[in-house]
Image (tube, rainbow, N blue to C red; front, top):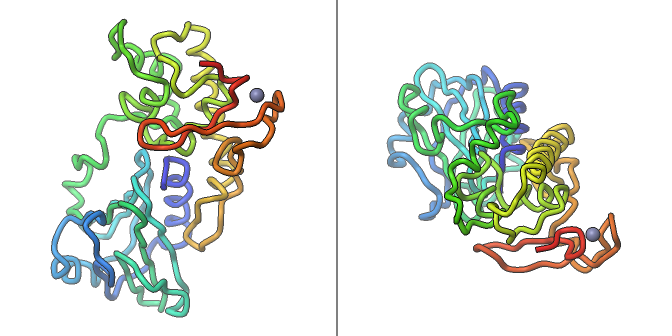
Length: 277
Ligand SMILES: [Zn+2]
């Protein structure tokens, strides 16, 4: 699943490797399914794409916006997309939900596991699209200050029952953070995923803010998680502190075995000693 860090890494690669490439053909791929979200018919995609040129790419939460000059954009992300560049046809995957062929013989494919989006939109409509979540603040930007983070708590009623997991990734949520990075943020903060948000002291809210920024910035520096892949099918260098591989392994701080639990439609991992409920 693409989260904000992977969106940053992929957008940078688009700008470095694909900017200016001329599209000669493209479309919705050879394997459509109902959770591969599109913005129009296969015929529309096939008609719009030829002749477009890859423009600037940017990250928006877990979404990657790619310019298709002169007047369209492609929105990818917020799901289980594998986005890959191919120097020639020899490495094309068997199934893909979106593809581009470039004048120089290269290809781009998007294969969607679970759900995901490949939206082709007129450029002047893209920023208002609900995938872009207009008005949100990236936790990797200078605007993600301690005061901004505090304003997220301000959206909760005093008797709010939300857990830390719900607060961080559902509502109000830190933009672009999902169940992947959540585990490491809460481990760094020493907080249990099921703990009530309103129980945090001001000092603990400081700690959670610092853990959020540190986790995401560190992961960007390392090129994203080692379980996610870049345009060239290479894994990132960020090894998560807690994930499926950690269960039963000793906590790096206290050596208590790491536990997992099903919670809110996903799995949470935690140290029962360092992250008390
Ligand atoms: Zn521990």
